[in-house]
Image (tube, rainbow, N blue to C red; front, side, top):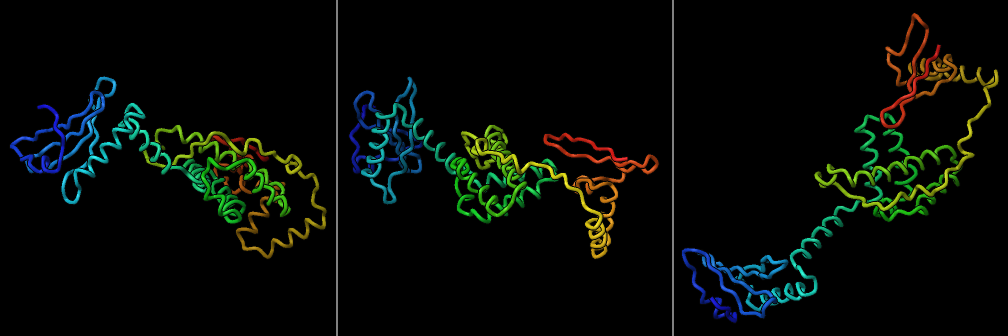
Length: 300
């Protein structure tokens, strides 16, 4: 049926039939048309139909009535038609805009990046998870609340340097480099998660990082120096005497460690009974490294 010029009276006079049917408004070739579909229930639905790359495409414009006039629908139609002229495919443009809005909604903050990294450590049963969480809380979250609310992709090397400089000003040394290493690992984790299909599938936050801001922050080498001073006899006596004031478990643990020439406490506390060889009088300690590896240390 040839195109019509739609008016309110024309639309009102379209009567329902046993099957749905459509009417289109006249338009210039290539411009796209305003379509009305009349349902058997009498409901009248409007669409904008146009051709793109040899295919017909339609965009729903809503229903007529209940306060919505033909003028309202025509205004929406013209807006989409003008957008079609500018973009070449209004439906594709709107879908891309929707995807961008969805990505924007899922943009993760710096705080969420830190949470995600700690969560990954816990999921991998890393003993360091609690330590890392504590470092982030004491030196990032509590002193820089506005920074953790910023988007992770907006964090700069200057921001990281400022966080570490605060620690230096407070007389902290070794932990400065430790925090720097964990922050760098957190950004690396965030970058890799963006390309993990599970992240997309689970509707988790996305960080969309373009680089690692910690990479250019200098590691302070003098904070890495290992001390070479040993306890004097008087200091050793004072230490053993102070142990008597501790609860039994702590006292026994520290005495054992002292007899083992002062091993790393975490390694000693992780040791199970299978690590002790009472016949051979040896103890096997494991230094857990990244990516599931470890380095063993045999004490005899």
